[in-house]
Length: 121
Image (cartoon, rainbow, N blue to C red; front, side, top):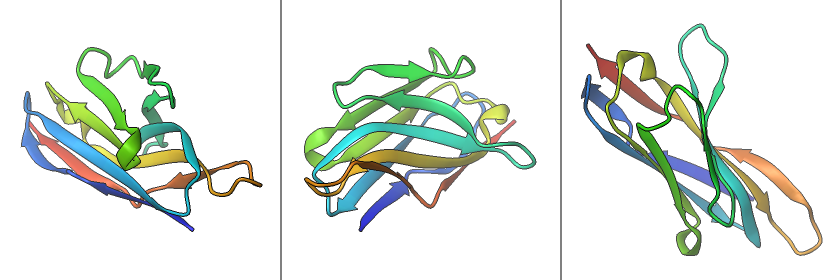
């Protein structure tokens, strides 16, 4: 069983910063791509940023230059540094990871429970 636990959400003013963390635990052989998604009220969940096992990154156009994704493979943790936050960044942020749990299995997708980020204007 693999669990993803997010932390670091909260309330911040426009222009402020927050750092989200997501730690994976359980039976883990390796973690492939990790990413952050978000879902605002009444909207579909959307990709925010992804990072491969080797550290290659990708970002949604709406967050490029403001958000930075990183990971610590030794700690099975992915981070999202968010700067210059805007009210439109308000959403529940979810962590996602493709995890290989055993030597005999392929990677499966796991999700965290979500953490609320609210940016006040």
